[in-house]
Structures are given as C-alpha cells and as structure tokens.
Length: 361
Image (cartoon, rainbow, N blue to C red; front, side, top):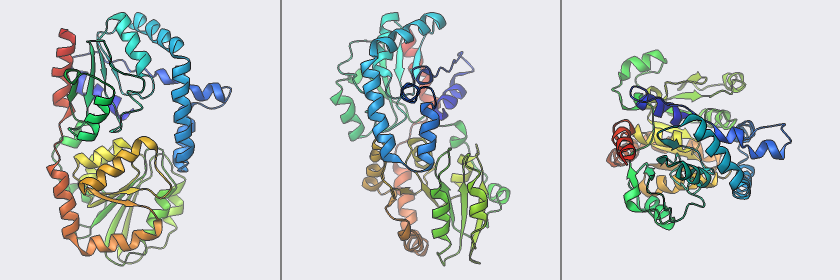
C-alpha cells in the first residue's frame, strides 16, 4: 500500500494510475476460513502478536495456492486486463507474478515487477528464464546477494534496472530539525530513540518502552503506535525516570520527519520501515526477539554485514545496549557514516524514464 501511494505520487501528473488489489479477489485465507477472515486481516492480527512462524507457514500455503490454481488466477487477470486495457502493468505484490506475467504476455502489455522486499524470492517464485521481452524487473539496490536471486531465476540482465525503493517524496525533502523537534516536544539536548513496530502496531512497543525506562542516561523516546491505540494507556501508565521523556503517536504520515530527528530506530524488519531508515541514514536496532518472517531475514543479514545497526535477540539486553551506544556516540556516528555511503537511488527520478522505455517497446 505504501509503495502504491508512492508510485501514484510519482506518476499521477503524466499518467492515470489505477490501483488494483488482486489478492483480495483471489484470497487463499478466505477459502480456508470459509469467508470468515481475509488474508490482510489475518496477517495484521498475527503481526501485532508477532506470530511470525504462523505467517511463514501461511506464506507456504499461499505459494501452493497460486501454483495449484494458476490457470484460474491467470484467466482472472486476463479478464481484468481486457476490461481496463492498461498500457503498462506494475506489480508490487508477492506470490502472484508468474500468473500476472503470463497474463500480460497474452495481452502483449509491458509488465514492470517492483519487489518491495529485498529478498524478492516470493515475488519471482516460479518465474524462471522468462521469454517475454516486455517484462522488466526493478531492483532497489545494487547488491551481490540481490543479483544472485536474479541470476538464479535466469532473468536477463538487460531486463533489470536498479531504481531505488518506492518511498514517499518527503523522504527526499530538506528538514527543519529544530521546528520538527518543537512540534513533537523533543528536547534539543537529548538523544532520541524512535520505536516503530509497523502500521498495524505491535505489543512489542510496550515492552521496548518498559526496557528503556531502565536506561540511566538521558534520552527521549518516540513511540509510533500505528493503528493499535489500545497500547497508548498501557505505555502512559509506565513510570518514567527523570532522565527520560516520551512522545506517543498514533498512525502518522510524518515518518520522514520523525526519522530525521532520531538518533536510533528500534523497528521490526519489514522492508518499508527498513528502507525508510536506510534512506534516512538512521542506525537501526532490528527486532529479532521472536523469530523473523522468512523474507525479512535478508534485512537482518544486510544490517549486520554492513554495520548499519544491531539485532535485538532478547528484550533484557536493550538497557545495556542503549547505554553502551549513548555513552559511545562515535559508534552511532560510524553506523550513520556507513548508511550515508550506501548508494540510494531516488525512484521518483528513475521510474518515468524506465516507463517511457517500456512503452516505446
């Protein structure tokens, strides 16, 4: 959804952009639950409670579903393409793209696949040695591990481009740091830690704030609850030490501003939040306390291999880790320097020339 909104912003001045949500029409979870619950609601419920192993199992079921019902799904896409008659199809959705590739090939429509996970295996699953010259794969970063995934699928190098990650344009605009701190009541002299556990919200946010109350060094904590407002009173009841101040926010579109004024980010490893922090040059402490979604394990390796941050395996280690980092600001500065050296292309500048090339074919 975040990628779709970003693409609409990039393209709406020159193109008519029609969002389409095919998984909601071919929803494996509705079939399994006899219509009681859809995949999105189930996913958000499990994410809030960090039942990652269940989601990993569900994802394997999704792969089986789209493989077993491939022909039905493909014909549904062909019917929709005939109805809308688009000049280009862009996918930011996993699992469905083998059927979508064949549907666009049948209708001779250019197809741009834009994975929103750095581990793109759920996006290119079953796509092997594609023979459709109007198919193109947009990659987020220039990276050997990402290239290896492409090579294993035998996708021709000429049909791939590094375009950056589809983030909102406010991540690329200058920031007035003093004004943002004043808006959110952030003391200018304190280090700031942002807790971000996804738009659906997670009960882990409460546990992280509770651990941060044990840190003796001065700090300010921003908690972005997402849509889980039930956590607000629980967090507000926590007794705070005199050295700690707190800002609690619900669902917000100001994440670019919040990351700009933060020194560290404690976050789940979802690729949108992860890439927002990468582009903001914000050192990360990734949540790994209860396992990881299998397509987000790449983000943990990528963080540790490049010294962009640390992985939190146990909540109890948080006070000591934060104390060490706050008492040694050169460590945080080193992580930020590593992030600044990462080449990060701006999708808003790359996408239109790429679309023009695809349409010219």
